Structures are given as C-alpha cells and as structure tokens.
Image 1 (cartoon, rainbow, N blue to C red):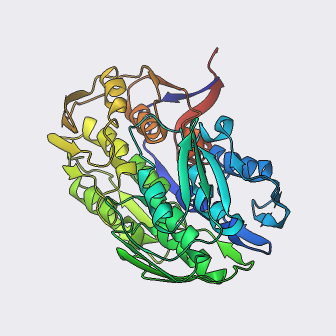
Image 2 (cartoon, rainbow, N blue to C red):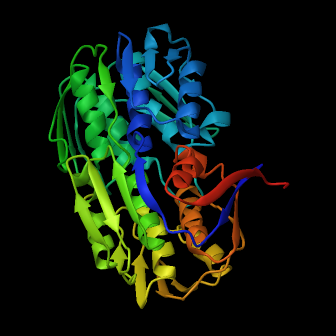
Length: 421
C-alpha cells in the first residue's frame, strides 16, 4: 500500500493547472448510456473513480476508447448487460448514476446499493421514489436496486432534501421519458449544470439549470456529441488553501472563478489577498497572519461540504477560535482526530468542530479515512514541523490527479512511497 511522505515547513509559490471535475465527469460518463451514437468527452481527470466508472461501462458491454490526452469516446450501442455489480459499486457511491440512464434507455437496471467514502449515510430513497413516480417498478432485493419500466412517464417530483446524485439520476431518466418532468428542490451545483449542458448538447430539452426547479421535456432519442468537462472547483480550492496555510502565493489556472465565490470569501476572512482573472485565481498570504474562520456547510451556492476538511486544517494553525459546522454528512470530522495527533486543538460537539489555533503542528503518521479528509491531512503535513506520513492514500487518488506532482511543482517536499518503507 502506498503513502505520502511530507516534510513540512515549505512556503508554496507558483501555479497549478486544475484538472477536470470528478463530480461532473462521473455523471457525464453515465449519461453516455442515453445516447444512440458515440459521445466524446474531453478534460476527463485521470482518477481512480473515473477508472472505476470506465470499468463499469466496460462490464456493461459499452465500448470505451481513451487517447493520450485522456479524451474518452463512449459508444453505448454495444451494451449487452444491465447490472452494476457490487464488486465495483462498493468502492464508489457514484456508480448509482447508471440507474436512471439504463432504465430510461433500456427499460431495466440492476444496481448494487453503493459504497464509497465512510462519511455517513447517503440514502437512495429519493432516487427510488422519483423513478417510481415516473412509472417504474422498483424493488430492493439482496442488496440490489432492481428497476423495470417499458416507458417512463413525466411527473412532478418534489425532492425532500437537496441531493446532487438524486437530481442527476432523475434528470437523466427524465430526458427519455414521455411528456414533461418537473423536479423541484433540485441541486444547483455547477457539476449538475455541467451534466445538463452536456445532455442538452446531446439533444435533451432541459430548462432551469442552476436553479432549484428543472423542467425536462422528454425526447425520443439522444445523439452523440463532443463535450469538455468543467474544471474541478474543489481541487482548485484545495490548492488555494495550501498556498494560504503555508504563507505563500499560489495561482490556480484553468478555473471558473464564479464557482469559487464561497471559498474565496473564507480565504479573504482568513486574511489572504485574493486576485482574480478570467480563468485564474491567486491567493497571496505572504507576510500576513492567518486568522481562524467560522463556516457552515450547505448546498451550493453556500460553502461546500467537500472543502470543510481543508478549512479545518487551516483553522488548526490560524490565530483565534474557529467554528466549523457540518450540515450535509453526519460523520465527516474523522480528520480532526488525526490532526489532534499532530498537535491540533479541536473540540468536537456533534456536528461542529471548534478549534483553538496552535503555533505549530508536529509531523506524525496519520491515516486518511475519506477523500477530502486525506486532502486535509496533506495540508496539515505541509505546514507541520518534521515528517508526516499520510497512509491509505487510495482515498486521495479517487479525487486528486497527481497531487504530489502538482504540490512539488509549487515547492512542497512531498513524495509517494511504499508504505512498508
């Protein structure tokens, strides 16, 4: 098993090119199942979750070709199977995104109940209830969601809570449904908008992207297209925090600054100077005191749950008291326990982490428990005194493309090792 070995205390300075967004690439890959022609996708990040999704498509009989630039062409006309098996789905919750497309296009889908990060419950009931409202027969049997429908029908769906994957699954199912589907309390995340933009480019008729009400007019078919996935706002935010926490100056390029507004507001609150261009953002923390921030996670456009752990690392070494409240997932502070081993001063109260900033963290062996927790431990290691070994980095490889290479380019002392070293 591999680990990341970090010698902290280096100020980070330089530029980082941001990869395509994992959380947009995965649903868009699933959406290719709806097309009756090949779909070409660009700016797909080279990540374990993407590899798992491509393997899943291959298991279904779909033809997938990848060129040297990581452009992916998917031809779903060769599909022969309609089951997403447990051995793949258990590693990645996003596998459930094939449910809506398989059912809409082929009338059947058997999808194992999902696994993925250990950050709490992500119930699939909203997916199931929505598909049933559209006329599907859905049952949960021996750990599988088994769905059947000769023809989905448009319906009015009011989602009980805001759900990103639920919104995405139901939007994809509705594209080929008969009549009009209205989804209320829909997720507004940029990755949802990116999926909708791709679907519309494939011939879907979806209005309201970026709002909480989506109107989908069903069409008879979706065709092929050539689509470029948007940049990863969470990867961008992580490198900006790396610049701030080390007292450096870091510019992320190939980004959409408008998707980072809630993150940039908190970096300014932490004392950083933020400069913005058309497709880049720069954080300058040189000769400035890092200040603890208070934040509360909530669905977009509020502060993203996927940046909570990174700001926990920032608060650990910032001046003053910081309060972070997590409202999306109930088990997402496991990284705090690992940071305490490095000398961080945190108090956990149910869904809130209260920090008293310390002057220094000390390097230690720490263990990643989920994707974003692993990123936060890398950040803590960058600023810690001495050597930090981050174990179980298969989590980080699910969502960050070549993180150690990108950090080295801006001055970090970090390398990937065999964990037995």
